[in-house]
Length: 313
Image 1 (spheres, rainbow, N blue to C red):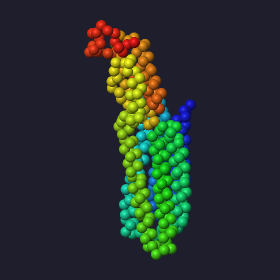
Image 2: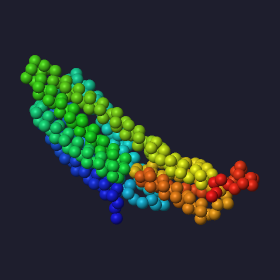
Image 3: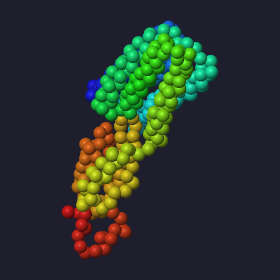
Image 4: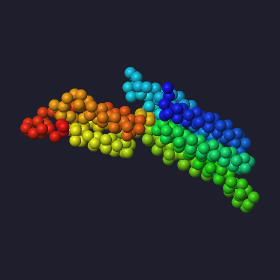
């Protein structure tokens, strides 16, 4: 039976796929009728989004598989692969279309049917903003980086479509005036703005995904929460060693060695370790904690003393 997180991820994947199919049809029609470089750039971004949506839909199914003998920590990292892939391809499109925009600055063409371009861009922006709000709301339920990246991508496309719509509106306003000859430059300028707009967040998206693929530790907030929960047991544990953390998609993993008094009974030590694991897992969403018990060694300063160990109550 699927949990709320899995249902939310699958729903987000379906919304993304359906939205990109609709956007592809609209923008392709607009490109054929309007012949705008900015729309061509926007269509290229949607094509990437459509391909990534298909990959994302299948990766969601894979990421929800339980851990097995081959993948001991599960399949969650496929979400980061999807996130990195989307960022890299978008940067590639931005570079290619920027080169085309520079060429068109020297060999500009008039935009055909700017009213149609304006209308199509507004519809595209509306679809993107609605889709973004829906997908980002689902990302809060499932805490998936891939779903959040898809929501951000949708929102970014919405701003891009709005930028293109503004460019078409300027063309419409300037055509009846003496500034009409300058309208041939608005399309490549809008393309350059759009390309710059998608490059920065796409780079950050890929950078974040690669860090997670390289087993970067949890974000600062989660790490502080780990220390907070461990701090509650300072009076019962001698020491905490080898505190490690990593993430795989929406899943988080925390490992720690806990040094306990050597004369503490195994059931009592196991109970303390279990409480620490439970507290960490209850306070960090999607976290799996593993605590290893280690008895204090001969170098413990309290061993040779006749007084009772202060950590053993």
